[in-house]
Amino acid sequence: MRILILWNFIDDDVYEHYRRDDRRAVDWDPTLLVEPWDTVEEEMQLIVRSLETKGHEVSLVNIKDDFAALLGAISKHKPELVMNLVEFFHNDPEHEHHVPALFELLEVPYTGNKPLSLSLCQRKPQAKAIMATQGVPTPKGIVIEIGSKMKVPAELKFPMIVKPAYDDASGGIDSGSVVHDRKALDTRIAKLHSENKMAALVEEYIEGREIHCAILGDKALPLYEMVFKGGLDDDGKELPHIITYRAKWDPYSRDHHAVEGKCPPEGLSPELVKRIEGVALSAYRVLGCRDYARVDMRVDTAGNVYVLEVNPNPDLAESCAFAASARASGRTYASMICEIIEVAIERNKQPKVVSTGFDMLLDEYRAQHAVEIPKKAVRSGQRGS
Ligand SMILES: Nc1ncnc2c1ncn2[C@@H]1O[C@H](COP(=O)(O)OP(=O)(O)O)[C@@H](O)[C@H]1O
Ligand SMILES: [Mg+2]
Image (cartoon, rainbow, N blue to C red; front, side):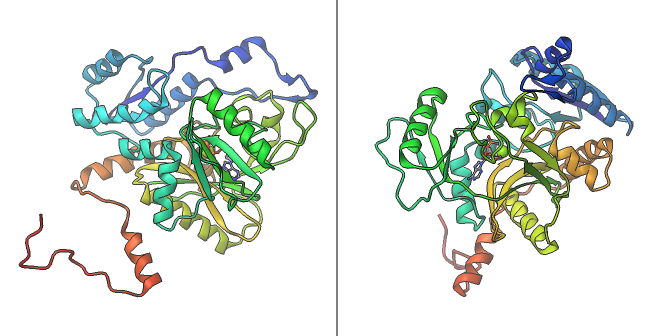
């Protein structure tokens, strides 16, 4: 099959710089070495090679934030399928979902999620609202808009976490994001409003284990735990057990070395694993996801599972959680990449149907209220409008 992989990258690759500087040890502990990471370009090349193992004819285009390049790549390569790995456009993650909207208009089949799911998952409060009505547990929370007089209600229990309502990749999350009293809460909300220029999502902080579930097609892959090893921040204060921006993106930071991925997690009973997977699949379904996604969750000591967010365009790099989960399932990296293509091809063969993912509401409603929901809202003979 003729496949066009699209990605978008404009800045210098920071890992290229690290490599050039040949800086291996971290400043705060000369014995601690940083493993070299691939550049994004190298990660993309690996995806190309993976697809070529299956005989696909692959082109790779960095659209470099240029709409003409995006359109030009499609008209030049005339792909039978686009592998959409674009995460932002014009430096704006909100444009992420406009890219597949273009494929929809051009009627070019593509891998991954549709515009609605991409957009919804990025808007954490809206995604939480939908999950809540569908019985998918998420932490209790409230949104405080910029300029709002609204106060966080006393029903929400400390500690809380203050995060940007519409960001991802741990943007705006650092060791000060978890707050333990009202003064710190108000200060943090004000800081987020002024620095991130964005509404704040304040949630009850879920003490417990952080478990991520990669979903491929309609199946959950082995769970992945972010294990918090503890440690101190630059000021000597205990780092909170959260994945901060630095933990994700700065391999020289203390935050980064305080977290370690483990796949599969240790010591989860088969029942709990099943429950976690069930919650993840429900979240995926009610947010209208397809092909693949990663669901981030916390599990408290009582075994309650909470969805923090659904990532409908997760990082597929070999070093990331999604690929680790695929490996733990017995797949090679190449077979995982090829399977994403196969899932999309298979889906495209099916007749187009409009699915809401909301069938659960009726089932749950019936179970809870023991009432028969009429099959048809409009009785025969009566005209609907
Ligand atoms: N309610 C919460 N309770 C505990 N930790 C949380 C909560 N919300 C977020 N976190 C921590 O912050 C990290 C980033 O939050 P998340 O909602 O996944 O946003 P992002 O889109 O930035 O990844 C999570 O991986 C987790 O470690
Ligand atoms: Mg996350």
